[in-house]
Image (cartoon, rainbow, N blue to C red):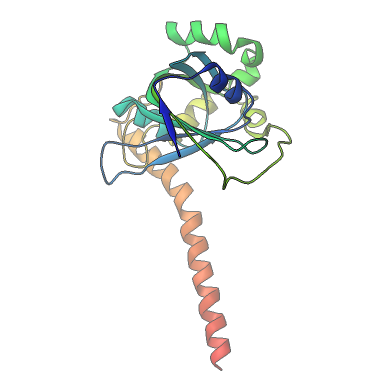
Length: 233
């Protein structure tokens, strides 16, 4: 049976520190909007107290988490045991986004992330820090979660952005990080959802991500149809 409490215990904090992956979920206020769920690696979660933690937010091909937090602040973080005793933890709270250049980001980054991420190439990966205030902690069994072994963090994304110029990174941000799937602005530095260029760029980015799936589905349907016709002959 699940259990709930208002804050993290010392045992919770110790267990969380050993996990190699966690999942971040957010959603828009619109009932017809898309719920987002993102897996996170690296050592990006830092627990500051029993009701407060930080998440390192990296560059990516979308801005769902940021856009949702800027609209309504709601966030849920889930962790589960892939080794040892089974456990699932859900951390319910509200999140505030701090970007590089803000006093809050600079202070939090220096205290908690600079040792690993201050190298200019690695810093290119960093998009923001999310400051989460918890109001509920849930724990359940996790009996159905499989055992899996951790090998290593993937360096692919960090390696991809480390040699990118500032102009290239900003171009990618305007293309991919201006609006969420539901058209909610991320308000990330350098983006402006009100401009025609931003809307056009965002639509182009969405098309780039959606069309390969549409094309793949169409190809699959054509192959299936051809196979059916051949079987009927």
